[in-house]
Image (cartoon, rainbow, N blue to C red):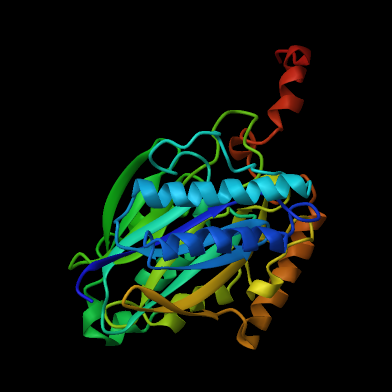
Length: 365
């Protein structure tokens, strides 16, 4: 089809089962009914309801473009219905992602995480949706860099003419709400100088030099008020594969090396990001380790073909075992850095409520 199709992935934590480890199946059922009605009414083309940990994920296709008020309201209303059921079940942290109880034109800024891209379907439109739990938006920096800029990961950058021109990175300073566009391989060291600080600089999107969207991530921060930011945002991302983009295997390969992300228990620690099948996406050890699920799709006339659970593969057994080894080491450090986040990041947890009352007891040296 030559018309543009919009892929929207919208996530919210509407209530956890047995703490923050998983969702109750009723929440997915509520979402299925809500989105099914929207499909019947013609608002959306297709949908898939997914989850990771205690987060409910809505994967939608439609023809209304990014930031469409009707589509965002559908997601908001769906989350509200699920939260109402979660409240009846007395689940944990009901609606904790909602920073407002009122919808205003867009779901952006209201708490849920969002990744959307407008595309013109290729003959073979392959893409993967990444969903993380107990992690921050910077979780995608390492894998997106490896996928689109590192020839030791992506051999297509070396041997495929379409990929040799490299990619353009849109990077956001999420603390100051500013952005910059940098080209790889020309700006590769400048990109690394920024995204290595994943708590401040986050890869928002990746583009071909011809202007085709390759990847989009969520960069929303729930709250930047001192002493109020509890938990992490649990980001989502959409990455296109094949042809002028890296192959699916090249996109998944970075997750074979467990990198450290902000999150884990109370959003206060670094933890290894564990690639898991959706059925294993219920973190419990210290509310973790942080998890990532990858669902692969084909798109045919706006319809979602799939998904395939990409990390449901023994090829990632070694990565999962390494995650557990890293977790063992980090947990032994308890509240000490570098297992615990730096003081700069901890100010967005409840730690200031403990430290502030001590101020008057300090003396000048």
